[in-house]
View 1 (cartoon, rainbow, N blue to C red):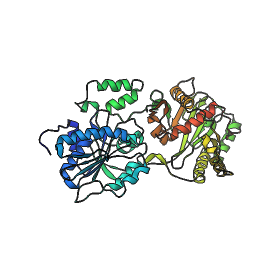
View 2: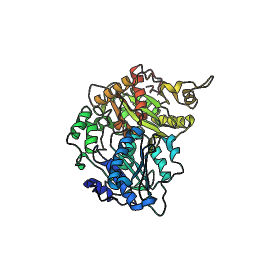
View 3: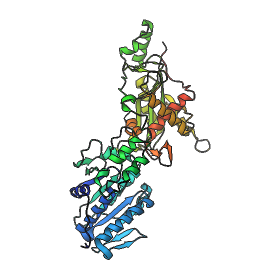
Length: 485
């Protein structure tokens, strides 16, 4: 390395460089903290340590954003090696005097992995990992982590909170994790260290950069908190930032078994009939409420179904009063890969219908409700629809009349905002609905259409609920099981 210049890492970057090499790294924090430059410093040190055996791959999701990082790398590497550094700009490859190689490339999805098959890298860095809504492409890259002569292999991720990949990064690298303390990441079974950063960790950022972030997020205080403070535990996402509040919208799980609450205010005759009905179906439907299911079909993508109760203006079994028209998500059936919240289980319709039918039966309602309009599309001459398959398997759905996405989202936001008001219907989510709570509160806005949810994010739970809401607004004429008292 040339002695002409000294490269001075920030204190936070020095801390990152001190992390033991046997651990993979997640650099997750606010904007401007110096994460990308830290990745380049880690690559530079790897080259110095392992010389000709160092093979480094640095990826982003697309080439336009990669060019800026490649330019920054050129300045850093040229500072270190001067004219001895080789750079093929067309191939995005740097060659070092020792024989080490650094390659910059993009990988948008699993379809791009073919470029890396059969190749070996001792260090792989995925910068701006929050740009990937699905971690599969990055998981696949791990198969190219191979090295010679005992060079330790390592993977490094960097990301800001609030992007389309917020959900899986939070799940894998933030929730339940202590910063700077090694932990085993479940999907890869590799030991990681999470290294958080904030804007103040980088003394080289211009003074007005904070003001630029504040201006860019002026209408979204939760995103501002994420970008400035590196806060991954934002309880509300960018899209629902002003309307969803766990203290108002999330409720205790309702019991599936009969209890005395359902008998309150009923005549002895009604009580006998209610008890008989509850015993026959093994559940506790409440007199006067209306029940239905709302489904967002998926196979490769998650399939999600909600069992929803609509209030007549009464108390629920939890003793809480729900104004007339309020919707309660009592239960959730989510066919989703627990390690990747944007990936389905690729189950067949009959198998998913069986689980939906059984769960509806546990609540004492028929497996009937609404589904995405696309579920009713017929594929080819004489071919049936997915709705036909569900019907044959015992789940009857009708079109949700989903209409315009934006009006549906606005209705959903209004119901969220009105939850807790004594005279306004709201939407309430049971603690049973883990997939809703893991995804909906942090859904980002579409960067090109801020009034819409980013469809690259795991919006399947939100879609399923939206279908139910729109159906109720446009008619709500579902044939669902009611108690005959």
